[in-house]
Length: 76
Image (tube, rainbow, N blue to C red; front, side):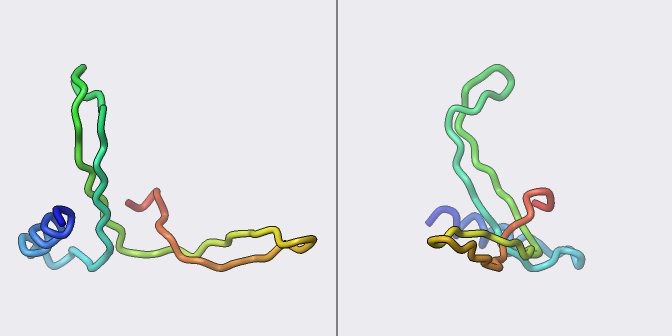
């Protein structure tokens, strides 16, 4: 896929010793307004650390707590 090719290209071009391993997310945006023009765009985001978070699920009369890992949006 295109996103795999973009990620592979970025990995092959990176040689800085402080670039850490992580997960790369590629998103396609349509109808973005940039410089007063409507355009399509690609967003490339990288996360180096997954963060623990709690998710709560109501099951009958109980509240179930689930520990999951995800991306802290402030650290993208």
